[in-house]
Amino acid sequence: MRARPRRPLETRRIDADERSAASRPGRARGAPPSLGAPRAVGQPSAGLERAATWERTYVMRDFRKLGIVVALMLVLLGLSGIAVGTLLR
Image 1 (cartoon, rainbow, N blue to C red):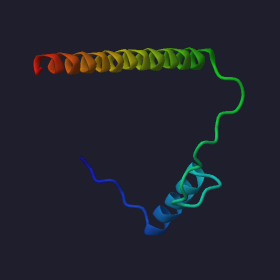
Image 2 (cartoon, rainbow, N blue to C red):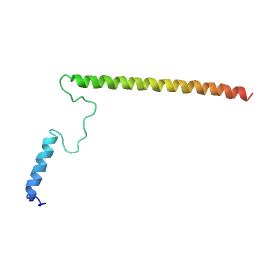
Image 3 (spheres, rainbow, N blue to C red):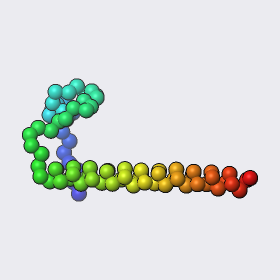
Image 4 (cartoon, rainbow, N blue to C red):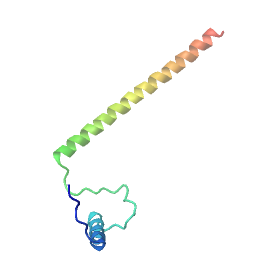
C-alpha cells in the first residue's frame, strides 16, 4: 500500500475554511442555534404528515396510560390507608 501524497499546509487551511463557510451560511462559528422558530418552508410531505400523526397518537396513548396508572395508584393508596386505619383500631 502506498502512502498518499501530502498537500501543502496552505491548501488544507483554505479548503477547511471554505468547507466551514459552506456548511453554515449566515452563522458565526459557535453561535447557538435559534430555538423555537420553525425552519421548514412549504407544504410538508405526505410521509412527514403520517409520521407526525403517528407520533401524536403514540404520545396521547402514552399520556393516557400514565394517567390510568396514576389514578390506580391513588385509589390503592386511599384503600390501603383505610385498611391500615381499620386494622389499628
